[in-house]
Length: 144
Image (cartoon, rainbow, N blue to C red; front, side, top):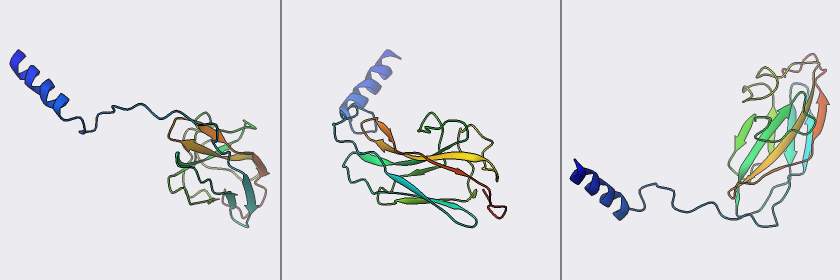
């Protein structure tokens, strides 16, 4: 049995590219960019938009919503959408997807005030929240 374990360990050590994490995340630089967020209210949705971030270490954006926290940020407030295409700069909020780990029941409700933001997620481990947009869903036709 000892011989089999030894051979197994020797094979793993001889094959460093089999998916084992050997390098820690890169150190964060001082030039991480904060998302600048705006919102447009439509008849049946809200569209969040932000300026594109051009940074080599950007992994993507998390669209964040909270009912009770006026400064929502991922991961503390969960997320609606994880956008890994860093050229995407908007997200329609229309209740077509359930929210992940938030402080409300998974779907937005008409007549309730919410706080919206976008968090930039960097490969070095930093998460930078953008400015907050506050809106009350008061349109009876609104599906959120």
